Length: 319
Image (cartoon, rainbow, N blue to C red; front, side):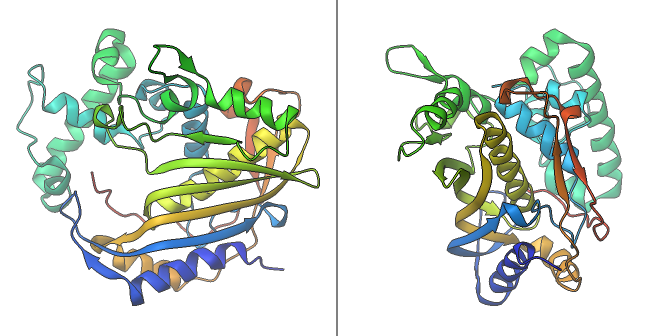
């Protein structure tokens, strides 16, 4: 039996390609966009990791655990060969007075269009990553991304200079007041937005407990449908599984509500290739049952089983 979970994502791709509006954007790449869309994933039907292209699950796990730890430095991610956030930290370095390499102005677009520039870009990026991993002082200076997700989830700063651990608080409320309508974690802190490398795209999530099952709804202000949304679906589904595990609950639904849902103009061919493929059986999730707290999980404790996707499809990231 094939599941309906992935078809929702594919229908979103079709709808945006066929009905979306072409718009300019911050990156200068251009998007085709709609405003306001919702998908519902029944987590009991299988883990919603796309099968019409390979999605790297280990990257999703390490990024989510990075958020959960309250970390904002890419060093932890690089230790797991996770390069998702490199470009934003790299940009800070090449624009600093300490950068001593070739001119990388407009590195994102040039790296995609000019093979010679791309070679230089890759060389400098590798150099940057090595320095982050090997030089703690350099990592502290250039590895931080500002007050992004992990900081807001675990160390929200109040006007009284106290901090709120939103994630720990919401887990405690799920255990003690499961019918509460205040099971909410927000990453959008207006005061901190200017200091973030990238203001949070997935801005707020809320939990709901019914019949012994935990469901989660995410509001995402902006979603890159081809590259970002598959990660977001899997990441918040995984978060729901981990919290349900700690709270002694089963999983219900992951509900994904998106504001600006867009496909970048330079992703059109990749989306069409993905739409030509038939979905396969969804994989299942395996969690180390000996770990009892969300905050104690390591990458090795979380695995995906029976994942047989179509091959990955590469596409440039807009920075």
